Length: 240
Image 1 (tube, rainbow, N blue to C red):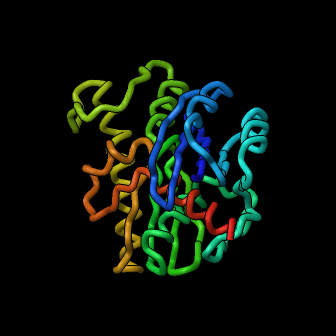
Image 2: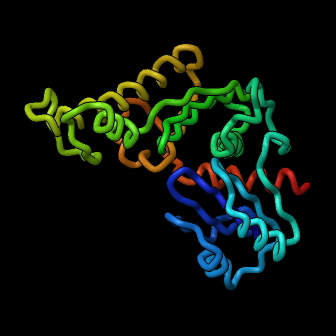
């Protein structure tokens, strides 16, 4: 069995894979030693991979290395099944490269746009067997918080599908501006990319993907577990 530890900006995903199939997935807002032990109880883990976009708590390394025979820490030195053309691979987020690996595993050799809508919105481009890089944009919650923090009177609100546009009140104006802006942005990325690559596959994932997917005007693949699937793929690829 394989253990996947995916530490993001706002939460941590833990997953167990057996023979290439997910048998358990959980999301934790705060990962503690006790929670990790609890999640792993009952499983005989042979291999593990740790991916993190921030500093990893030492107890994770201590616990995993002490109990699991093969542990891989995802980094710019990890072996990948495609060519990474990013000019500064040491600054490339591990979640982004894992999503690309997951996309490659799903649609090997095809042209793919991977959109990960979480704390930030990332756009990553895989052309055949070459990762071309991508772009980073503020996520939905960051946009709400920025309007609240950097203005004098605008309120802090949460995302909702219930708003009018053109808006007739300030709450709706913020919702329409942020949600509409993100939707237009994503649709334009897809449209522009399709002009150059008509056979493109578009994948959307991340915490806000479920909220956004119905608003998009293009055919997409909603794959919420593409990052952890990619991490399992990288783990197996590096264990060979």
